[in-house]
Image (cartoon, rainbow over all chains, first blue to last red; front, side, top):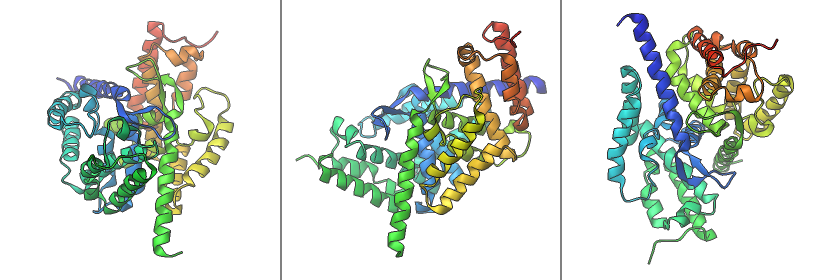
Length: 203
Length: 203
């Protein structure tokens, strides 16, 4: 393939990817936006999570490359284009992981090889939650919905019958990214119980 | 003010800002998303523009700090919370600039002083279009809607009676950020005319 043709092929792939990812704007989540009673989509969530990371980076337990965290926030939910949003409190998290991997291969696979590698590595790193950046990005991913539910009178928690013990358990990974933000998250959960917006453990 | 109180004040301001900016999710633009006939909002646009910048950075005329470009993309439309979206082809661009400056002061002013300064400087830099990063971010901001209109049979162009000469004039600043992407944008405009989706200059 000559250089000109190969450049055109490369550009075509990049544009195809950029149009395909638009589909996350139609993947809706379980939580509603703060200033309106409508559900949030994955693109809006990626945008908000990026800005949360930027503004709250000083609370990270470890020193972080904020640029990497933001990139993770921007791409982390693209895999939901094929599989939809899996509720954080759903039981089928293993199926979710297998399906999301397939979707990652398809969607990131639209890109030229070097960019496929870059974005796939970023997503795998985010999913594994081992590095400081992945841990902090994970904290942002979890803190957002807790705030949204708190300011929405526990809407998604109540709709899906989620009690405080489960919320505390599933979201304790916020602490891996930030002790201080985990304290904040716990304080919101406690206040939600006090306000009558959230049920304590069953039984 | 003691340290503890001052830390709490700081955190409160950051959270207030993060909730306030949620409002851009209800600011709708003139262009529709690629995979659905509904209008795009500013949060989705900020997310998509960030990913366009990330994937297309190699086409920048100048060497750029991609992290800075992404930060600009994420915050550039927050000023529309108070003033709404001003159509690119509208005549009242001066009023727009005065009003957006006021809104920037109010919204970025919710943040602690150091962060107010950081975000305000980023926004002013983006608006001025003098640095390499601002020029490239500007190219992304303009290229997105041209692509959206092209794949939507010229929807916003036709609805608002915009002819190709005006599109070429208003969007020529894409070239300041990227000669190659300006060539691409022009090719889409030409194809739209050929397809009958866009009118040439009046008269």
